Length: 478
Ligand code: FRU
Image (cartoon, protein in one colour):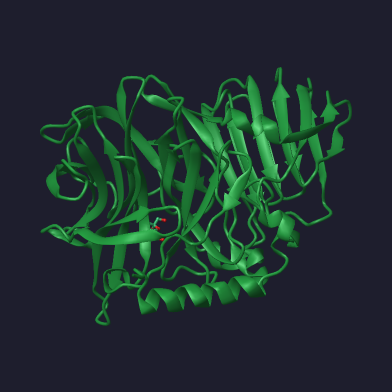
């Protein structure tokens, strides 16, 4: 008996038609080659990231029918080695009444050998109201079986309750953190518990604006994630509504973490201050998973829901946004460091520059650039559309804003620079400074043939550039 509803069949057919029309995904300007980008439409949050039976599965928020945010699908890719990825058929399409306006973000677990997806069924009403259902689906070899909603809206909260992240604790129970907005318009994270991952009970509000030690801290919190690393319970979350404070909170929405201790019985979470994960322009809604080797890996969306979105130049080619590279999280006291996943070394192709001897050089469209032995302030001009500079006090990233045509800047205090690893992929920059203690991520849109870079310093450091190979199958379709 088929489990696919008529509406689901129609949406899948519509999607197949759109994908059949799209021929040259690999050849378009600004298309990254080792970052996941949508063949058509809009990609945003990473979802359902899991290492399941020897393969990494990554799902993602996808609106295949437009380059704006609309009813979201879940795209699906997988890989054995974090380098060579394979595309699967779409995992979730928003076909049922309880998800009529999108299968919103969520996570994946392995339960009794089965791969289960938790996601938010987003429903909007014609009077402007909305509600949300937390739903479950099971991924089998040939299809994704929807099991329907397992949680409705809790009392005291608006329709903005979403993004379930589920994990199993050492007490054998399943736990879920859920993003929420209460009726006083404060952003919160709710903690739920379940014995079987289907029947859920609210433990309490574990963190939020106007909760615990925090004062006003945003009108909505999105995409929570909780995990134990280095003896600390880290809570990742994306608060919306923070005002800029010095160099902090410069982007429209924030993405960062608390370090603390969660009492699983009472749901009380005592934590320190909020720290941003990224000091650049574009990193949002990240999700982590622990793989079989015990590493805590993270992917983020290299984008933000903000005013620059609708002017991305890729829109005229029918697609927008991409995912970050996979990174490993390392606990350093109450701080998190991010290191590029070591597998990315396997994407290195050719050492095109070894020990730079001139100020000016050119870079391939996809490359990794390393700077070591930094002894003096420097400025690295990158393809005439971005600049990384260190003046002895601050490290700054500047980019040419594609909407305004003006330069804009982000900076982070940084007294010394030991090492820099910079990943560049056509229109992306991810910069790991001092073994990932500071990370700056950004999209930018240099002219196609402007490959020239300049490295200016009184005492030049040791600079190397590797070209990188593609990791996505759609490159072969181009
Ligand atoms: C974060 C977010 C999530 C939501 C999803 C919808 O970018 O707003 O809170 O589930 O995107 O695509």
